[in-house]
Image (cartoon, rainbow over all chains, first blue to last red; front, side):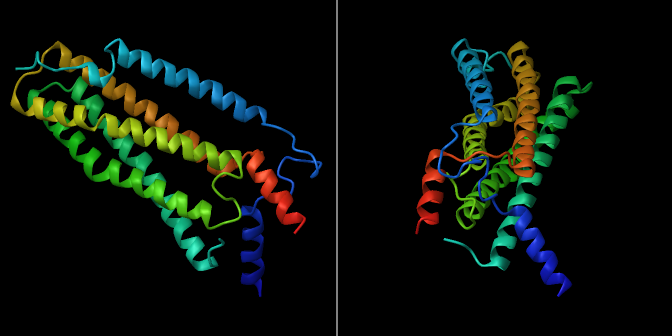
Length: 68
Length: 171
């Protein structure tokens, strides 16, 4: 019985919240701020990575021919 | 499609184990990369690069793939879904990107190990070694972000998730 209760509690903790950020279930509240922040940081990092590769500072730009 | 409870827990356990293992394997790679860069003797530097290659092929790559696959099964088999919640979607995108970056760099890692075994390294080699340290440190940060997302599960539904929820609520 206790085990069943514990499992039910754990399942509840791991399950998505019914409204999950949307307080009014009839209206979509748009993209959360944390997602926008993640997208901006991700785009900047991706841009840096691409620039590094293009300028030959990435791994792909190293021929390692100087190694003897 | 919801999975049965025992199978769901089994997949989740596998996902946690492989994800944590992935971080551990990258941490080991970082230690070897630092040794390769700062090692005092040629044999120890060579050994570090050979070990880095082995760690990549036999620990990092399998764990990354296993983490991706178990995460995919886990999300599709539960109410979270794959495209319903932003945190799941974000994890998927970051994992795909991290795996792609890893695959792109497999050949240079292999080349570095091969170069280390044949002779004394030149200046290009040390530049590549520095980048190895930078890349593995960045990978650890990215993997910790993934772990944080899994634990905190920040709220926010995608438009698709919201539409699905509305459709389910109204039968």
